[in-house]
Image (cartoon, rainbow, N blue to C red):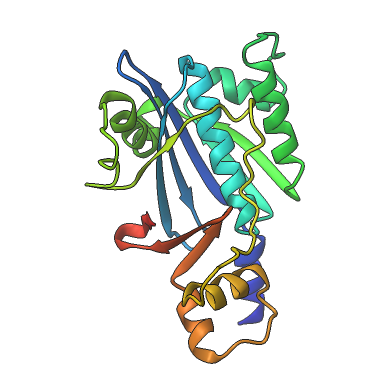
Length: 222
């Protein structure tokens, strides 16, 4: 049994990513596939000026930071953007002054993993990430309307303009809150907490200073 568990732990997570730019907005779609086949879907509306390739890099960076925050050490990056994939594989030199900061930040993110690989696939095989990116780039949302169907988080600045961290951390609560022991345990899995808190924490994920709950179809709910 332990050999099977260790084999799963050593198996790579798969990161499917895509970005989309329309006249309305831009969006980033990410699908994370665990070694056991569990899918996590993330959608971000990029509420700042960016081109299509920048949107694709944004999706890649969000996915890498999320996996790093989850403690994943092995990742296979999969996308239909030949440019981004060739950059990561060092088959193309990144000479664009616009994309160079994204490429450099991607290299920094990859250095946090023990092992990584990249794979280019046709657009038709990347349909999940593409479908996740499309709604965020095609629809103009009013304030408070981004969570009606599925979570589309609004990202108001570029990854290369501000140091946005996805590190697991603890929130400072002014008043006692049921989330405090959960957050503390997610930050320190070896901490001694009661059995109820350990069980409850299995349903949550801490990204940066935001606590998310695993919803239906493995969507992350605030």
